[in-house]
Length: 346
Image (cartoon, rainbow, N blue to C red; front, side, top):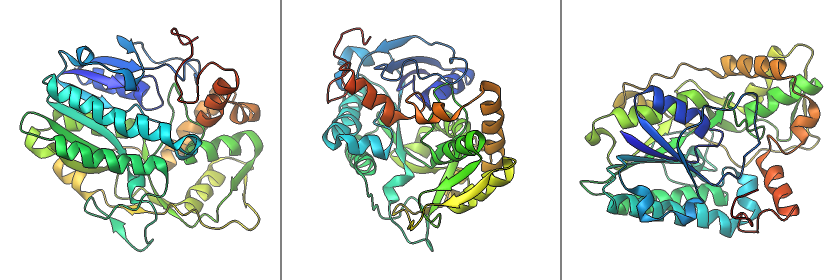
């Protein structure tokens, strides 16, 4: 297929472009370049790309594509809370506008990066499949619910949206995110010897390695249309639901000399959900996840050693999305709607 990959220069996108290309697809990226320079080690191989804000995509940009893999978004809760209106403009309105343009241009597949955070605050006793009720607790998660609903209304015989409800991602990427729980805990343990939790560690969270997540998207594109048309899939593996405290203890064991501690008076994070991944295992036999959190911790630890990660790297803005955006705002390089003030974005 010829695939338009939005957000190709981000944490997931830099891995996704490689996985899809290795699967034999012709991949063209689309990205606004907000995170140019936020490198972790060597950059990803470059692909042909359109430098454009996803809000500004035009009909001509969609011509000649067989599929859209849509990753571009305000990518986490703190950044989503910074400007909720902008979050909805990008994550909701632009995602649906892009889908309409794709449908009208004859694009047959639209693979949307949703999130297990749509389940929000759930009972720790429940293991949620794709029929579970939504209970989002942040603008980011709410935007995902809204897009899934609107894409369902756009589905027709020649336009097949698929909703990928990703577990919380971890693992090494050329655009590393240090604000993701596993990446963050390993980074602080390596640089300071502390595995520090700001919650009480009791909430559940499903976790998936970035490479496995990208292979799930590739499996959707390889699957017969009738298996994925207007379908939602929880993306992860059944044995990779963890309490946050379990992950912290895993990191403590992996990083010699590190000590686990909890914030004084810490309570539970309201985001708590355990997720069932039986549907994706049954419906997409081409998806065979190979990573575990334990193996991912070892991968991250090795990568941090090789690059010589320091505490000030974790406290700076290279690996923290909210701090990077805040710096661009403070410097006047982007406006409050997260648009570049210069046409070139520099």
